[in-house]
Length: 366
Ligand SMILES: Cc1ncc(COP(=O)(O)O)c(C=O)c1O
Image (cartoon, rainbow, N blue to C red; front, side, top):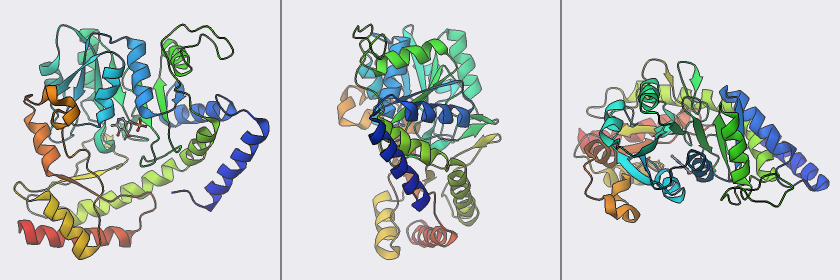
């Protein structure tokens, strides 16, 4: 959502960028980094071309080559792909059924003598209340906790923002995300060393912007100034977007609480989700495709994409993991639907969704 004011602000910024000719790694990138760091209470931010690049760069700074990296089976392909691109071996761990995130127990079960890092994913925008316990577990093992915070712009636990609980947090600004730069990613970290390394990696591994000596195997992972301007303008709306999204979630919570066997998302004490997704688990045995079809055909309500409908070990590209036993991941992926949440959604629109979901639930599960 870009309203007229934001479109004008972006157009003015683009005019300025084209006039100065500073098209990449210029003042807008710095502005975006500073604003994003401030918004999340982090010391350093590094903007990149995508969330996948942000993850890969963090993993490269850790150096996971030839080593194991724990990732949840419930996540987007890119979380595990970034490990592979950085030369590591993903080890899939199961998730907690309530938070859809890694827990200390599922991580313990996936650790090996050669674990180099753990990647925690804040599914749907919820930071697990076990995040400190996960950090403590990683600290005891002497391995970094990395956050894939692609879903979690502005989400908090105990007043602390997603992306600030481990060594580094990686965000995505893909257009579906709560704030976007068109395409893009961001690393947040407290470590000045990691910040400096990330800056080197994102610019072809060059020792300095104007130098032609390459000190790392980096790539073309820069964010353009045009994207940085879009991201900076959009980020100014984050608080307002969160308010709207949380109001929609509260409306869903209240209206859907009584539906038999249907589980609405719970914010554990201290957690504030950004409701990137409102993940509902359908009662066991309800046909998800039929549920979605009925909402669309009979009520004109299209349910958005799941997060995720298949765990990673069921994805064709990860066939070597297909025999892994990850029962919670399988169950929560098979039963979930995501109710629409938009940053400019009205109460009436939310009520239409409630009407559809309630009626279809009654028909298929009542
Ligand atoms: C959980 C998760 N990780 C990583 C990514 C990758 O981000 P990007 O598409 O910006 O590379 C995404 C989003 O697309 C995501 O949802």
